[in-house]
Amino acid sequence: MVYYGEYEVSLTAGGRVALPKKIRDSLNNKEFVITKGSGKCLLGYDTKSWEKQANQLLNIPILERDNPENLKKRRILFSSTVYLEIDDQGRAVLPKNLREFAALSKKAVIAGIGDHFEIWDKNRWEEYLNKVKS
Image (tube, rainbow, N blue to C red; front, top):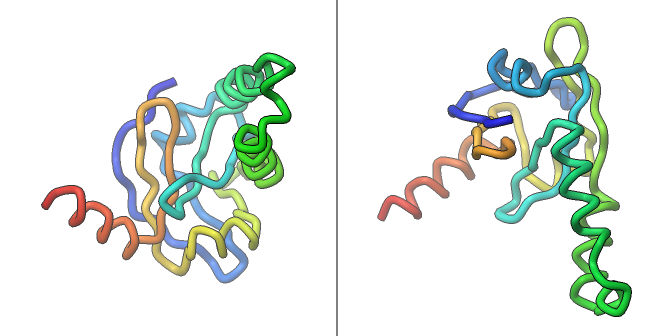
């Protein structure tokens, strides 16, 4: 699965977002995974890719599992991960806690980042792009 492109989307007050067709086509089914990302954005994965990455994270040696830094990362990542379904109109509802984390309002950007896609507040995405371009 490779995700490309940048798409401006709208969110309803209830957090419903229409996923671009190219993103939906890359997901291969009507379910995907969303979790918190760095940079105050959301990360999206198809379920197979997510489960593969999650298993890699879980397969660390037993002596390293309780390392405070590893445990912190696992707690944040897994506790904020949700499986979402795409309805027949190509929409999904982003949970309120994740919308608040990413400060998503009415306008957002879905950006393909290769092995996953990210959902950003439109203004925050533009600020990020300006920062990395300079």
